Image (cartoon, rainbow, N blue to C red; front, side):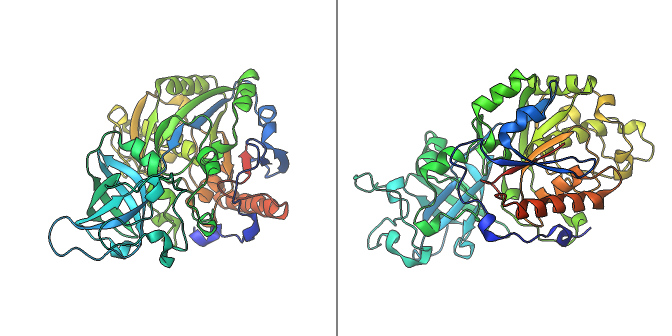
Length: 445
């Protein structure tokens, strides 16, 4: 199957630039995955559409304002310091280890290994610092972007953070090692901006983000800091809707998957078989593991909120299934190259053997653990945990759209799932639904 099979045309005016005025008021398109039947609803009808005994799983990862602006502080190793030449945009995507982060930088061609980047306070975030350097807020080479409103204080004499570029990768990837400071996350929170997707335009208005984004590009139940993008299907929930769900007998639990670099990188291959995703870290708490085991034993539905939650649950099921590999004759090749947690570690198995393994209800119990996953869920994947999916509308030719198409497909008919989802998207476009992160949502049951 080709990446181009997942193309659709979207009028630009349907890309939501702001969240709805009130959280929880989005529209919701409901798809019956058995028939493809579509029903127009509102998100507030979700408690009515689920049923008592359903297990709803949400991703409680919290977004860190990791979009930063730096100036070039020279080379930290050898050679002459380069002349500062504009603002460097830095998007932190994953903490590799303490004080060391993977990042996307722009313009990447100017940022070399061994160079030092300096990050200034919010009121001087886009200013250079040092003798003979003019404030960059008046430079035209960054689309007129202005710093945050001045606090009236004098600019800081020293940068809030500084980092050495220690490695370079493809497509603007760099590894940064930050100088040790007290409370790194507090400093990032003070000078950083929310990592809004590029299709949400703020720079043209002279700002990197807004107070609205600080609140609304974050779920109301977010707890564990670590994501470089919001798990956007959860943006619709309010405390009141969560309480109503519980009141109707829906069980609610959480996983944590920190959204990383894969969210920002487009698909650069033409065939689905060649897609490789970056690994992202996740945690399955004991309470959620117990709830999944009970729901499985009692044959109750598991509803995943978002593609991040879906990938986490299906990765875990895959690893548990791999634990019974010795009972599957001829199993030998890998499914997912992601790191396997020690509790679940086993020899890898072939895709054919994996597809023949029992459903989760017949597998060993899931245990609480942490790990990482690079699982790609495309058409043909057999879903072993998730039986319902709440998700936003996704970009053309994206791995997220492929996941939704895989979930919608009747077993053994992967192409039909693609057709059903693209038909649903066509319906949404005709109906004026709002797309992407701040847009409306879709419930597939």
